[in-house]
Length: 391
Ligand SMILES: Cc1ncc(COP(=O)(O)O)c(C=O)c1O
Image (cartoon, rainbow, N blue to C red):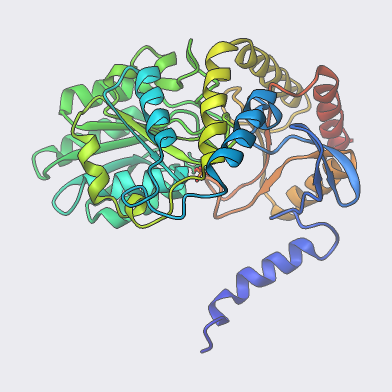
């Protein structure tokens, strides 16, 4: 058996997906024109699959900050946070995150993936247990696997199921860590975080929330799902990414446990990788200020996603349970989903096609993510594109 034989099935699947035109996975965006426009397959399209929720990738203040950092501090740090890669700006961003969340500790990572990998794999270990939502992101699964703790999954967004599992485990393990996401990346639905907090309180477990798809979107200050539900201070660890609402790259963990700071010296995903570039850090700091100063961006985003959700429902698409920044239409058959994706693209609308095993259940999804930067006319055109699939 050759080294690559085991990839034959996946290679066939991708060959099949690309044989009749532009690749629906890893789609080349030939040029980016704005937060909401790009060139795909030679044509100008509306970008509605980018996670650029606040549309900040072209924000003048963010671009200016990034350019200034390039000029002043160069292209990269060329080292890990524990060696030569902790610039004053990395520390300043950590202080700003601590302040924004009202929590004592904050750690900035090079990506959101590494934030989950680093924190989860380090704070629990053999003899402990993790109970996580079954639909958690791959970075949560990977961190859990690396930790050496016993890993248990509770039914997606089912706090009663979580409660049962935690009760069974409580007396048998050391520390117990519950993990959920604020808004789930595939269907855009929200965690029942208050009910999950009840389970945490009753059991004495630690609670971690990944706010990757809720930072900048939910809560009166845009801090995410826990803030929206008034239980931010119940979170032991809030993780997230800079690669969505903040339009850059990187990740963070904030916590009111002062002990988090010492964990830096044990996290391999933090220690053995180069730190974020000065320009990335500068754009994130500027974006965080914009997010705080302009709540109207999340109001606008909400109007867009509620409109798209209602519009697709009317067109009889099968959607997730509630409107969210991600509106995903479900297809039983991947071939049908691919055909719909191509029709949307030919109507000038780019969304994400997601096929199993990356999706919950065995469905394929057309995953549309909205942006505050979409104009009302672009939302009309997105809806018109979907109506072409049904005609
Ligand atoms: C829920 C969730 N967590 C973590 C990540 C990883 O973030 P990053 O892209 O910054 O590595 C993602 C990215 O898709 C995500 O959806």
